[in-house]
Structures are given as structure tokens and as C-alpha cells.
Length: 327
Image 1 (cartoon, helix red, strand yellow):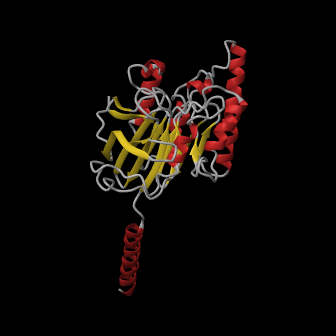
Image 2 (tube, rainbow, N blue to C red):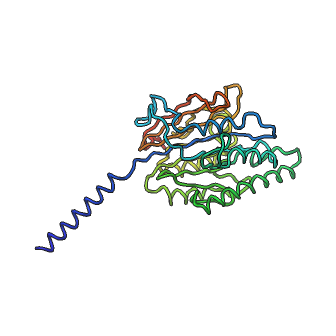
Image 3 (cartoon, one colour):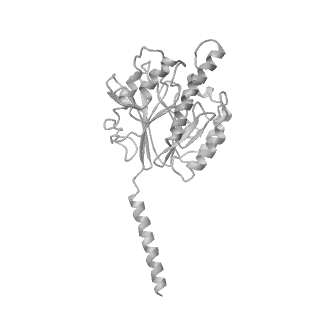
């Protein structure tokens, strides 16, 4: 009889301990910047640092609109967890261009140097740089850029800043809290410069996202009428067949140099703007926040070289899990 009561006491204590642990578990709250199409070019520098100065002022200054997702609406960003690049970091492959990029986007001190962890991404200009009209020169330029990316990613892997790396495509993944991020580079299934990353991606998500935790997916090519022509149908289908099995919180792309919210196979696809002034105004980047099961994305458009900015459309607001009509 005493053994029965002892067992009940132990089980009760374990239940109370479990419930207390659940109550003490902090709410998911992750905020990142996603920037696309920096296109660093030959010095002298013009406005390349405007993005950086603005990113460094996001904390305690960027407020999501009142119509953002529940729990995020009207709140200021208190902590920025990283900066993700959605491809076309460089316009050309040259040492002096890389040197300028490193001054801006390798984490350090100073107003014009990024203060946060940067997760690089490759686009068509990085893979096929317009160095000259000779194929050999362009392949040499590609090798130059990939050598730099390899050095950055291998260092991040050694420091455990990233979890998983596909060496051939340079695709990689990492976690911030329980949010799983995947950088798929130009596009998943690309074989122009590497082996396909699709098997790697399937295994990565099976390993790191099978328990239903949110997944943020980033690549360069998007799905608007122009960009989708760059992304083969077979690889698109294969990618979305994989993503359909997981809790996709956000899908972000670059390439088109215009901020927009597209939809493909039921998924909202947030297309990030380029970094410099053009016909649609000054450069801008996306700010993504995931708080609990709420997801909001808005664009941050700089207004000067002092870090002043406006919060502008497109806006994406969701509650997880997304209601995807899967095909």
C-alpha cells in the first residue's frame, strides 16, 4: 500500500515538474533581416553602406504596423537575430569589390559595418559574374566568389553558427531558437555549378524540422512572371513536394529588384527589393518576425545615409500553421 502511494507521489511530482518546465519555456520570438541584390560593384562607394547603417538601427526603432499579426502588431523590434542575404551579393567578381563588401557585411564595429551575424546567399550574378565576354574569365570569377563563400561557411560550421552544409551547392541551414532556416542559394535543384541540393534538403528538413517547428526558406529566384522563367518547372515541383511536409513559416526570394508578395502552389512568397534607388524608390530590405505562432514581414526603406527609414509594403501577416491548399 505504501509503495502505491509512493509511486503516486513520484508521478505527481514528475507531472508538476513537467508542467512547470512548460510554463517557464520562453515564447518563440525571432527577428531577422532579409536583404537581396546588393550588387556590390567597383569603388568608389556610393550608397552601398546605406543598407548597413539602417540595419544597425532596427533594434528599438523598427515598429511593425498596427495591422500586423496578433502579438506583433504595433510592437518595436527589441532584438535582431541576424541578417540573411538572398543572392546577388556582387555585381562582378573582383578583389576590390569583395574588399568593399567585407568592410560592410563582415560583422564588426562602426556605423558602416554590420553589427549582426550575416548569412550569405548566392544569386545569378555571383554564380555567373559578368567579368568579360570570355567564358574562362567568368568561370575564374565564379571560382573567386565561391572560394570566399567556402571560407565563410566552413568557418560558420566550425563555430556552430550553422548546423548543416551541402558543400557542392553551398546550401546550408541553421536554427535560431526552434525556428529552422534554410539558405538554398540560387534555387533548389540547381546543377549548373554544383550537384543538386534536393536530397540534402529533404534530409535536412527530416532531421531538423520533423517535430513541427517553423521553417524559413530562402533562395534567389522567385515566382513572378519574369523570375519564374529562370527556375525550371521540374525543380520547382520537387521543392514544393518536399516543403509540403513541413511547417513553412516564410519563403523569401530576391532577383527581380522589386518588393512584392507573390503566391505559388498556395504559398505566399515574399520578394525582397534591391539595395539602391531606382524607379520604385530607395533601396529596402525585409524584416521578418516570428512570435509564438504569429508571422509578420514588412519592408524597411531607408530615406537617407543616417539610418532613417520608413516601414512600407508589402506586408505579410500569418498565423501558423499556414493554410496551404497543397497540390
